[in-house]
Length: 260
Ligand code: PLP
Image (tube, rainbow, N blue to C red; front, top):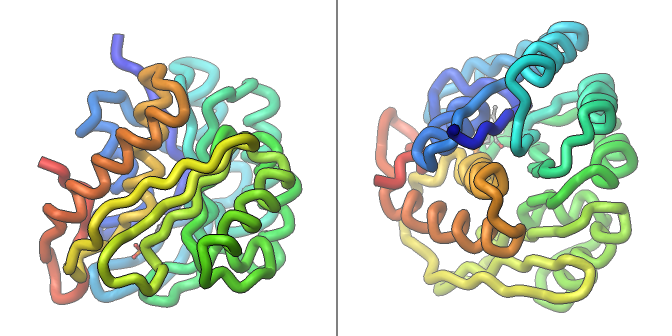
């Protein structure tokens, strides 16, 4: 039987990020993908032109429908948009006892659209992080969450510790936004050990949906039963290859969710 994964996230009509990136990634990794949509974005390679949140009851029903019948070996969250949505996800995670929960704390799209309300960041920290198997902030998100400037590796190590203390069982700070032009170093911390995942930086503008795809690949590998560190390492290889294969689909930056 195929492993099963559920993504709770926003829809990207352009097919590069969000729910669409997650489902494509699950499929590429031979995992049966399911979705609960939190918001519909009107979006293409040039940016987000509209955001339409799904009513809380609709989000809750989607999750219940999937969890009561099909079940999930791993669950991922992406764009959660507001506090009521976070509350629903936290309740479901506790009720269904999700043990593989990947929280990608999506806040703003690269094009600048707000994907999480400012007053929902606290809820993310207090309600969801304590239930997370791993959280996967990029550097700007980690900086927003911790209130720290994160220019050096030492500062990122300290931020990883701070986020671990918020209750997540592991923290992955993705290094793609660091200004180093030669390499990207992701930092994984599980409360005892720091693991550095380093790859050469690829020179491409086609990185739309990279964060979603990376977290979805971690989720897929957790669904398959890999230990966390192996799931992250496999996902890191997957996203590196996917960025290599990034391609233009419109006039703006293209997607990375096709690793073949
Ligand atoms: N749109 C949605 C619905 C998302 O979930 C995300 C992911 O973070 C994005 C857009 C952002 O994608 P990017 O910043 O890679 O363009």
